[in-house]
Image (cartoon, rainbow, N blue to C red; front, side):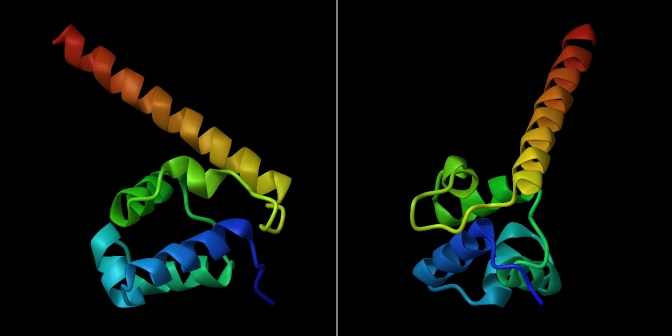
Length: 104
């Protein structure tokens, strides 16, 4: 049975608010419909990179997807740690690119 995570609820909500179909949403963020379907069901969690794409596509700030509110079911601590680690990895990759660019 699928998990009903806070992130999945928020993604479902913003897709609904934008009026996009699942297919349009998938195209807009450059991913397949099956990936979007798994997110919406709560079967999978999007990476921080994917959350950034969702943020850009929907106009919602990234922190909207990362923070829980009183009305949300509590996200699993493991999911939060994974998202935080993915964010840190992304930031490190960006710093490495900047260093490589300045070296050339």
